[in-house]
Length: 72
Image (cartoon, rainbow, N blue to C red; front, side):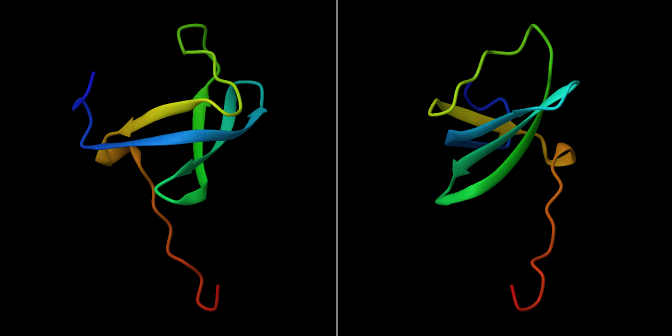
């Protein structure tokens, strides 16, 4: 549903790592290839493959942004 979330961006799946209860997904989003998403490992989620182009969306309260380390 377009417009469902206040933050929506298109990205490309770069890496998928199965970690039991979730899948760690690294994607290229907004010109960066280090966008990390934790997706619950549930049957109702879409099946993703490396190289897929998908839309990412999230609510403000579901996002955690970290400060850049000085000198990084």
